[in-house]
Length: 221
Image (cartoon, rainbow, N blue to C red; front, top):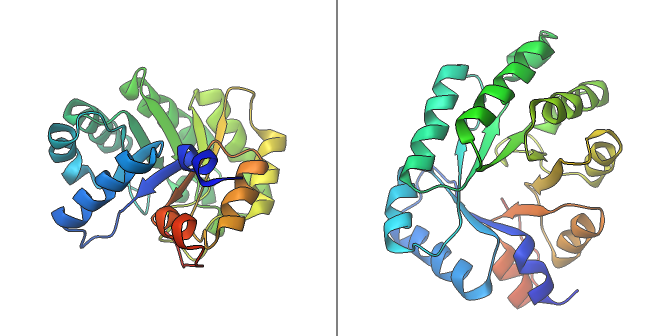
């Protein structure tokens, strides 16, 4: 694949707690130059970026990175981000509920956040590094039935990132309307190509520009 084929799959990401305005501006400039799908940025920067770069598709994260804020808080976060200019929301599921087997609560929360998002895109981060295959399969069902737009592997802040085995597992168990996003640990152009060829509609990474323009391997987001 050539670079121009890959950039439209990229959520160009900077979620580090110490991200500066200058770094966010650089991310946005790169996203506009190379035509990435979105920028994925902290909620605190959404209004700033929307005002300064109105042509950009803005993604932000809620319940991030641990997922255990309450449903009401996640819904408020989503609504606030959308008011500020976000078009895509990446939420983290409550892994406490998952580990307690309370999957009805997980599904209800995803459904509530999707209602808050309205016609905006909702991606659901299930943080695969902490889950068994049985839990991953169950969450594919929750995401599908709740009407979310994407299932996403990872926050990039857990013990591991995207694994191709999980994308293949998702593909077997999600509904036809659900798309897939890989995030975390994307270290090479070959990784980008691998996840796209496996069916990912998005890849979350901070390294795509560097990887594609230099061919270097990198730790990624």
